[in-house]
Amino acid sequence: TLGEVERSFMHTPIIGADAARYEAWASTQEALQIACHRYESENLRRHDRVLARFASVALLGVALFAIDKFSDVTCDWWSQTCCNVSRILLTSYAMISGYIVWQSKRLVDRRGINSLGNACAELCKEMFRLLCVYGELVSDLGSGGLLQLPWAFARRFLGR
Image 1: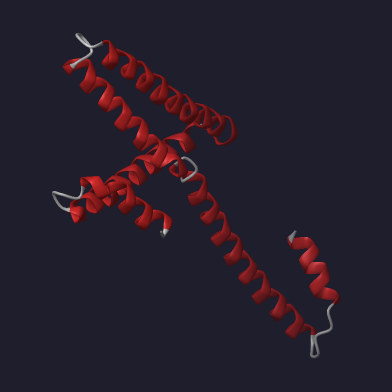
Image 2 (image 1 turned 90 degrees about the horizontal axis):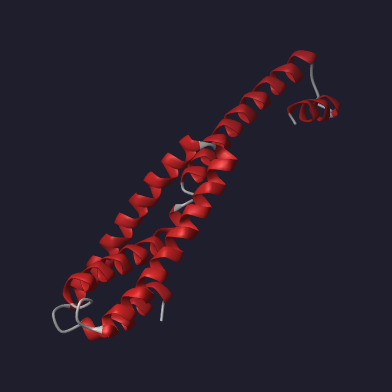
């Protein structure tokens, strides 16, 4: 704490008058307050980004949801295989959503509802950023490169 730092500082030998000691302590205290303020603001920014680490998983959930709804319209009404795949997709994106909701509930319990709003906004921003990165990667592959997509992702994100 600041009191412990001050006690330690006052026991440290500083050559000169008492005025020099108090001046040195004032400048040290000012530097500590600036550093404390910087760390507090950094911690607030990190708390706002607590859900952003789930952006790729959330994006996968949104993609699975879109594929499921597309299959509902196109082939679920006549193909049992599509119905089975649709159930698997439903289970997958429901589990992803449930996990993110559970993490959100934990955030609300720890930091409050306002923190959840900020974290959800950061999650959406990160999802949009990833969507742009993935879109750029697909556009770089060209028209015949869809078969190369898994290897391109591995090279880009895993360094292989």
